[in-house]
Amino acid sequence: MKALFQTIYELIGQPQPPADTPVYRDVIFPNLGLLNWGLSLALVLLFYLGINRAMGVATFNKGRHWGIFLALNAVLAFVITLWQTSAQQATQHSYIYWLATWNAVLSMLWFFLFSLLLKRTSTNASTTPF
Amino acid sequence: MRKPTLLTLLPAVAATLLLTGCYSREDIKSEGGTATTPAEVPPTEVPGAVASKNTAAPSEASNAPLAQVNVFLEVSGSMEGFMPKPGGGAENTRFQQHVAQFLSDVNRSTAVQQKQFFRIKEKPYRDSYQQLSGTVRGGIQEPAKSTDIPSVLDTLVSRYYQPGSVSVLISDFIYSPKNAGAIPYIKTDITDALNRAGRSDLAVSVYGFTSDFKGAFYPALKTAGAKRASCCDTDIPYYFWVLGPADAVRRFDAALLSKQSAEQAHFGVTYPVPASSLLSKFQNQGSWYYGDEGASKRAAGASYHTITVAEASAAQPVEFVLGLNLKALPALYQDVAYLKQNLQLIGQDTDAKITQVFAATEQTRASSGPESGYTHFVKVRLTRLGKAARPLQVVLNDRRPAWVNQWTTKNDSNPNQSGAKTFALSSLVDGVQAVTTGEQDAQPIFRIDLTLQPAR
Image (tube, rainbow over all chains, first blue to last red; front, side, top):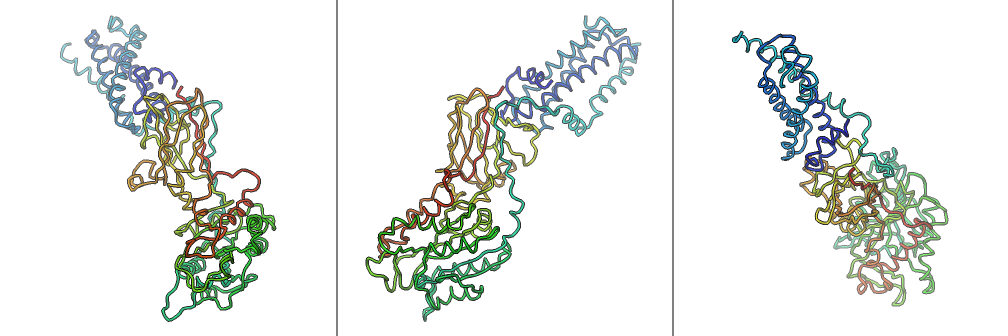
């Protein structure tokens, strides 16, 4: 699992400064990865099963509503990265913002994949986004 | 059903907030810590990596006081010039001030349980502290004709040698062999004398001092007469020799002689491996990081000995700093000049070299980083390393300090010409070294094992 997250997050390059590599690989990457999955899954469940099934809201099932959740997901992923790196006392470096951006991109990917998996379970939004 | 949209959405928004808000920072931190740092930490495990054995286990007894110290003051005629009888001028020598102070320090010390004081004539005579201190201050009452250094050493090693106790011999160490033909055998004489009792863990620390000298000087070489009256314009050296089991000598040195501004040399004394750690955020350069297990935990006081290099080339060299805490070593081995000469890096498949050795500064001591805990720093630079983990050792070699030869003269018949030197000192020291090192090669003072590995 750790190796998987390391692979995914090091697609944008080695952590900087190099001295912080152990803490990124052992703590921050796995944390971000797991939190990201949890976050995306939670938002997808909320959108398809919460709003568009259990609560029966009929006016929040369009593509743009799905887009709002996608954007929310990305913003949260960005913020979570900043928070995690500061909680782990990673050295301030522009790399942190690149990592946060990459994490946001990844979170949108997870959101999209979870959407594909779960949209059929929804009653009102089973065809959102397509 | 247009209006209530926001209202119906409220629970959803609330749920969203809840999802992200119900964990406090600490919750997630600890959860993340336990959930994401499982026991297995594979990236750092490299087969063939040298297990670092740098966690020196200092003996538990090292804090307990020494059982006994025996202080021997030579009181032969040749020592009279160090301890002139107080005349009208009431001038004393540096020897008197220094030795009186040292005796007082020993007598007062809590690092030693029992203190005994002796005058050495033909054989040791037991004195009280007051008597011996009085001799130092007031001059020698009945000087011995001469004392023979090998027989004195023999006596100390065979009769006063006990675990946890040391003997301190204060003397000018002017050894005059019976005739000129015996001079080449000084080393052998000393070796035999120290070896007679067959002590396997014998250690000797030699401290050299100089003092003004007011009296008759008895040279070892009598070519220009057996004595020079009213000597000397130059300083004359005198020595403290600390003899005993290696562990006791080390502890005595640390307790009572660490602050002496003396030249020193140590033979057979062994020291615990000093605390050390790589410092990844102190004057580091290039792409490397700790490869030790648990490096990500960044525990306070943790030490690291594995360098994982992500990239190293001539254009992108790697520089790392190893912090050393040499506080427990004698001043000689804390001397940056000595360290620069004798610290050696032994590696495989790498061009790693020590580029800099420096002592702690105000800045490093006041730092909040781990560098504040170390007294000395060794900077290493490399541009190339092996394909897998390789051992890298930082070794402090034991080399005889230069002063021993500088203080040695072949002819002491006129100290005003030869200066503050002792006859055949290096031969005496050769004799000591032959006993304490035995047949095997000289052991380094310490050896710190590092591991150098490429990133995977």
